Image (cartoon, rainbow, N blue to C red; front, side, top):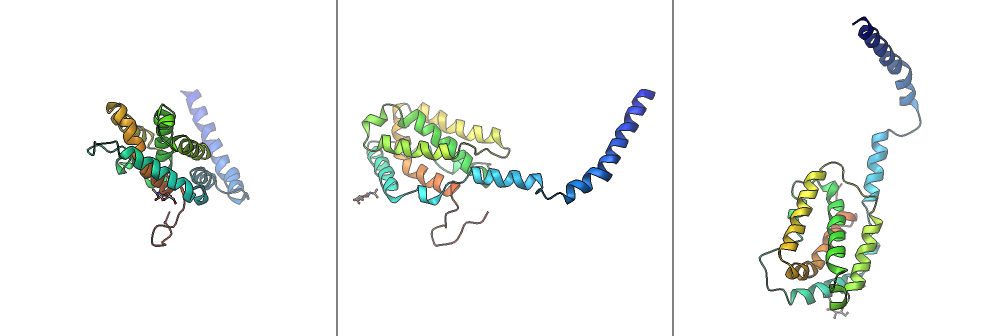
Length: 196
Ligand SMILES: *[C@@H]1O[C@H](CO)[C@@H](O)[C@H](O)[C@H]1NC(C)=O
């Protein structure tokens, strides 16, 4: 007991010491507050340059999507959509799209589809390069919710079998727009800059 009291007292002593001596030092130090630094880095790790989204690659992606949609009769299911963002805050949307794109590249575009469709390989390379640029992008919290939403997309795609792949390719135009919107500070249509 006495030992505990001594411990407590010496602990209090340390707290007192830290408050009086270290805190003022920290406050006057020229380094920016840690929280701000982290937020700054995370934000930039989750940003792509608008210039990455060139008109020719948009055209090829849209054309590829259209080709696949022509052979997709199922209009009930949707893989890419707002449901991926369900209960996920906006600052984590870019991370969600990075993961969705990674899934589509790996599980769809780099499978037999790459020889089956014109532009599939080119679009796969483009998307893979985007996810590479986002490799340090991490979510702030909400990991479980994000995994749930992505898992739902994966489950739906697998459930549809081969049609699931065709559908994913048919929605590449959506995916392209989603990752662009989530990961660039692009001016919205109408010229209003997006607020963060
Ligand atoms: C892609 O470009 C070609 C040639 O400029 C054009 O004919 C076609 O409509 C474009 N496709 C899409 C989906 O924008």
